[in-house]
Amino acid sequence: MWNIKKEITLVVDISTYCNAKCPQCARTDRNGLGKKQKLPLINWSLEQVKKFYSKEELHKCNVKSITLCPTWGEPMVNPDIYEIIKYFLKNLKPYSNVYIYTNGSMRDEEFWWKLGGLSFRYKSNLHVTFDIDGINQEMHEKYRRNTKLIKILNN
Image 1 (spheres, rainbow, N blue to C red):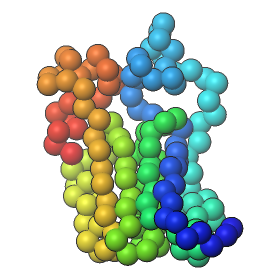
Image 2 (image 1 turned 60 degrees about the horizontal axis):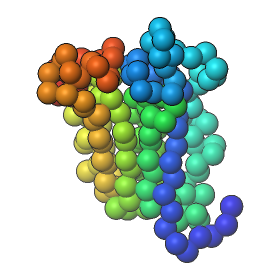
Image 3 (image 1 turned 90 degrees about the vertical axis):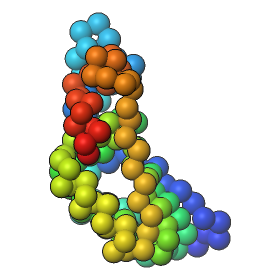
């Protein structure tokens, strides 16, 4: 890779798995609300992340932020997610950003508490956006099926 002077942002899909069945999602068969099988199911391992995003490359390419987004899957379904986020926070330049977009229904409150602590440990900013659609379970599940609003709010 090259030395890049301008700060860049990476957008990384680390999983094609998802626990939800959102009708508006391109991954969902709207007729039966099952999953479309055209997409291969993969999770990036911590070792793959380290291979493709080494500390040296992150610095040479002047990566200021990384966004883990659910374009093709829910990032929190990835079994290595905690270690992957920790790796990015630890190896980005100080005061960089890691953004996570999630349906928020994976993991438990303890996981989220522990995850939040990483931001302080590595002097980087961790931003998590929980996607909530509605003020009660009935309204929420019209858009975020197979998730529980109360669990997301607790997380």
